[in-house]
Image 1 (spheres, helix red, strand yellow):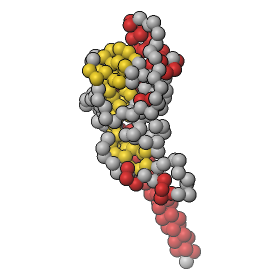
Image 2 (tube, helix red, strand yellow):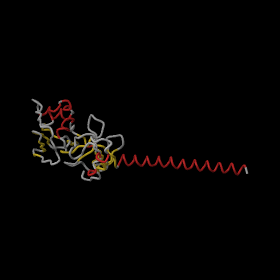
Image 3 (tube, one colour):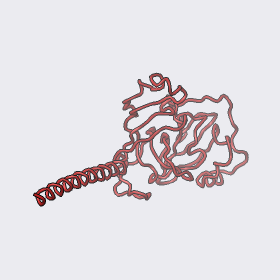
Length: 241
């Protein structure tokens, strides 16, 4: 009887251990799969500022397609495969120079394009761009940088020197030529956007994808106690990006 009782106790312990092991293994595999999907296919992003208004609002939550332009090797700036380059007018997700965090802006010019902003109006290759998605909320107009030779202007812009000149590049900028293997990115809220006008061209290898779906939106200016009003219901499940 003792052996039988001892055997039963051992069997129960073994069953508990096997169930615990299954549970731990399930969690580990779920984590590995989730990280694999996040690294190579889809990742969630939150819009922290108003630089892309009115297209994207502060508090919008996106799922980004990380395979649309290519597959990145994790923790590097290299691609395993490259499918295509971003097109003019596409919204892109990237890590800009000098800041190690994700940005979401619009690609407005490609390698070889000449970009110029005159009196807040964008020109690409000498042609005025009619951008229905752009807004200007600041009635002020900043003058261009004074007395800068064109060669020095292009060089300083490529090296990111305009990060330190304040608003001088905001409303009157360029002309500059986008270097090979790079693009020019700008926010739709042109008077309140930290973009290529200031930190220079964006390398294609630093572009990680584009928005796939806006799956949730939260207005942070509304009290937490008014949850129903804080959620922007009409923006949820928007595929327009």
